[in-house]
Image 1 (cartoon, rainbow, N blue to C red):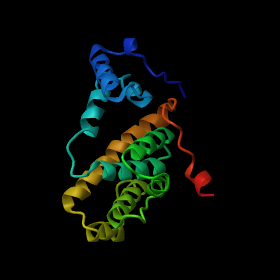
Image 2: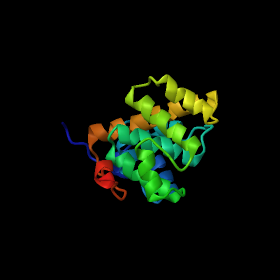
Image 3: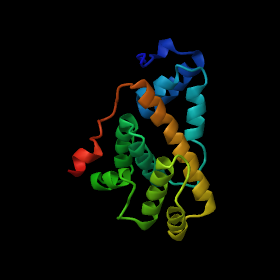
Image 4: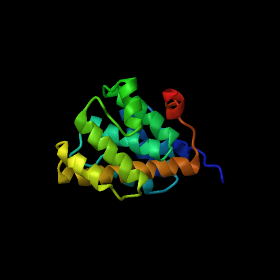
Length: 182
């Protein structure tokens, strides 16, 4: 496999430089994964538009999906980033580990969301009927269902880019779930 560098600001297009500047202001740095998107003239802007689009899911709900999907897809970068983001949004270490495994015993509604996200990811878009029924029984609606699938796709894009490029993780590295559960 060819090695992908994490491009620096001066190595990307003017449009991507402007995005880098905005990320620097908003986040304090340009995450390596976002910088890697900038190998393309359009991918970074397109991804950020998708990722920041309006959704019926709240921030913590989005993190539940991000953690479950990234675990299934084996994306260490996204697991590390979303572990840090989830902590900032009030999840405990134990809750984060549970969400990574596609469960949330601490919240019935999040449990149904995490289970659906994991199931859809594992089955490449197909969901088991019982998992879908449980999702709706937990109080979610059809808008939430569609928005969850969009978020699964959003996170899968980042998972695949990281897994294919193997760029360095620039967040505190999440431990493998098996090592933590052992």
